[in-house]
Image 1 (cartoon, rainbow, N blue to C red):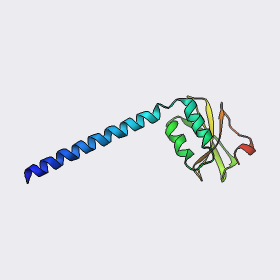
Image 2: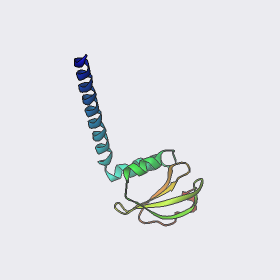
Image 3: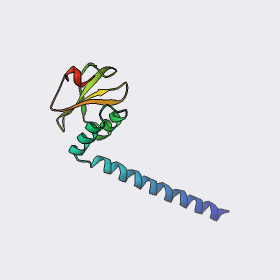
Image 4: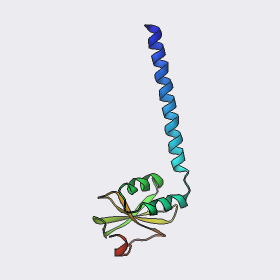
Length: 114
């Protein structure tokens, strides 16, 4: 009985170690995506549910709110990436990115954030 317990514990430790390594590898790969690919992926999927999650993963800790304006499903927030010099217009109601532009933009044109 003690041998079974010992084997079970070693199995659990091994499984947890392997899953932890896989998770660290995945998160490291997500952070190593070049800026051009991040912007292209966000542009390609713009206005689709879930792009807000992509935005948060790609620019974690780097987004500063610049302002709020009418658009999306009521209001959108313009978020600026100081490191990469891009502004994103984000609709929190549907968790979507609705506009992307290079530079610091406080107000997007109304037709871009509808």
